[in-house]
Length: 72
Length: 133
Image (cartoon, rainbow over all chains, first blue to last red; front, side):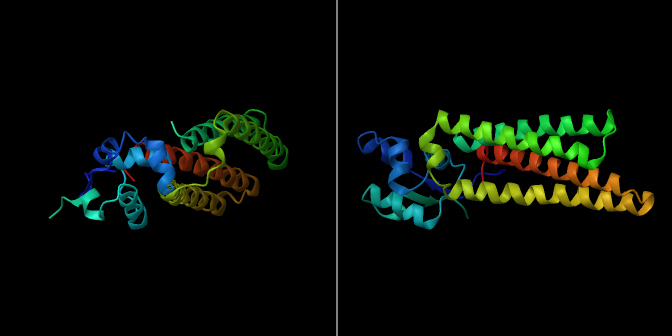
């Protein structure tokens, strides 16, 4: 709620780069619902560290290739 | 709309309807707590079971999957918000009881606070599922 979170992500970009992996398929791969993946992509939810690592592993990249810090 | 949000809408509407029915029984028909609460509880049980069956039939996969981390956070935050609504109602009821010393009135206020608390909980779930958690 309220102001934008300082954590940014490239989930949508990586998903599209990986053969148009669907939100549902990514959600299933990391153990969350499609709606949570949508919320992450829209920056309405910052996932737990565990889910962050799981997402990075799906794309075979490091955590910081998926998530960034836009705060001070 | 996710399964959790549809469930929250259904349960919220069900409580508004059954809560309104309870208020009608108490205020218009002047029934005692036991006479008014019994049809209310039966109504809540029947509507809840029917709503859950219909919603599960509409999306069986989502219905059988466990809540994920975001949904769990939403449920916890909504329950926390609802606890304040319930506590406020109970404190108001106790305050009125200290003045009026009417046990029947206290029962009604406590039950209505419980209903309002649950409605607030489902409303908060819908809000949090649609906005940033």
